Structures are given as C-alpha cells and as structure tokens.
Image (tube, rainbow, N blue to C red; front, side, top):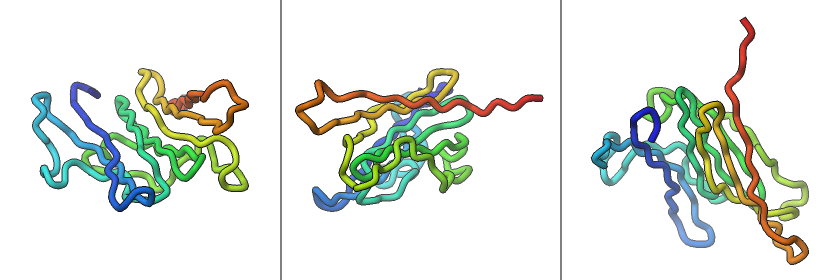
Length: 155
C-alpha cells in the first residue's frame, strides 16, 4: 500500500536457468484486486528490462519519490530514485543509478549480494540486502541496509 493505493512489484524471468534474464515490473491494482493498468497478458509497467546479470528488484514507494533497488552480477547492489509519476508511465525512470555496493575488483571476490527488501520509513526510503560470505570461517551472513533521504534545500 502506498498513499491509499495498492502496488505490486515483481521480477519476471525469461530464458533458461541458469542463464535467465530478469525484468522488474510494477502493477497498479484496485483495492478489490482489479488490474488498473496494462492487460492480464502484459500487466503494469516494466521498470527494468530483462538483463541476464540482474537479480530480482525491490520497490519502495514514498509519498512523492520511489526507490527501485536490485542486485546485479555476483556482488553489486544498485538503486534508482525516481518521481512517482514513473510508476504509471507519466514520466521516465532515470537512466542513472547509484551503485550502493559496487562490484569488487577481481570479479567473484567478496560476498555475494541479493536484495531482500525495500520500504518507506516515512522519512527516508530503505533498501536491504543479504551479504553471503560464502565461507565457513564466518559465523553467519549479514543483512545490510542503506537509507535514501530527500535532499534538503536551505531557503
């Protein structure tokens, strides 16, 4: 729920495993579950087109801005902030994104990372991911978070 409206965000796989491609899609639904945009065969709007290096994405909808966070490759976490008009196609998603956790030099070094949640705290948008150390030497995996605040402008 966001602003009294119901939104569903999901990843859609195409291709064969393990070389599948993931698209991230957002769908606007009525309170009774009726589809409000798109068709049953092509619901909602594609926020990120299919890419073989991308994992699933998570969407956080704020009062006026939203955040789409996704994992890419082995250990990269990325995010894009955008105005809510992009959810309905009234504006475009930015082509620029932020690398929250950039790819480590050397490819597969360091923990693997997967997005596990995104949300609105009321003051900031939040993205969370799992750091999987891939090692018996570490006691457990970690859940990491990043907060995205609106810019403050002095007047």
